[in-house]
Length: 327
Image 1 (cartoon, helix red, strand yellow):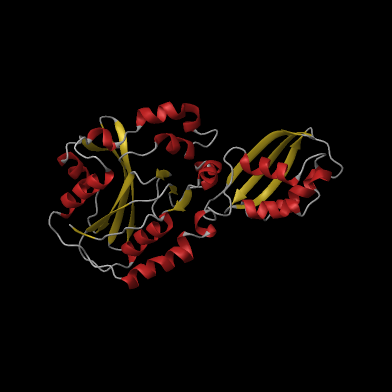
Image 2 (image 1 turned 45 degrees about the vertical axis):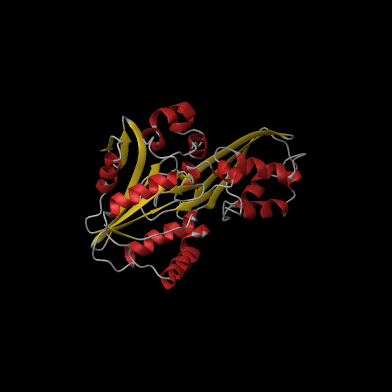
């Protein structure tokens, strides 16, 4: 199978690369490429980031958030995770599974979109049809940091939160444990590349095409509207004990924008708290926007003895947190 080379580790660029290759790269035959991302969480096209991802963990650890063009669930990537993409009329994960088996890994397709080894998941993949061809792309966990994976995808109240990190370790595995002949991911990638290519040549991808991919990344895949604004309805509740008493914040989001807001609790304040809640309606639910709104309001008059910073922390660091402007 012929192949492309994509050395980027920028998840926004790499999501753009996938869409560009699916919709614009001129090839009538199936082709593939292997690639990696710096630490990042990639959500499915239809997912709500506020209910699927621990955004506070991402912000604290400098983990980038991206949204892909295919469905399925959220996945964690780091530089010890190898990703594969296959594009064509008959695109399938079967060649990847066959390649793993040829390297001594007893891999098998299991369930809807997973690759398992001895009952443990080592890969998830997703697909999308576009006109007369489709894209299959997925992960191959080689030596991924499973603790960070668990924390990044551990939204309080989720099934993962109930089961914990130990459960995650019991259900997933790193391929490194099954590939003792390789001393690094680089070596494994080179071997997998050789098997999948089977002697076929690399396809051209010139600077003009790379520039087009970057433009698509800048205009779509790195934007708030694509990453957060695609999130549909979500209900978020934050609760904490502040100087004024117990404060519970209830937010209704749609498209990453606050549609309804209310404060409940036994707190004291000179002004009706609903007046402040009403100021939040219509705002993006991100740190920069919320912080600006709170700093422009007399927060300590709505909540006795409470500063804008303290209320901001409550709003953003509860259940799942919210991204800072740098993510």
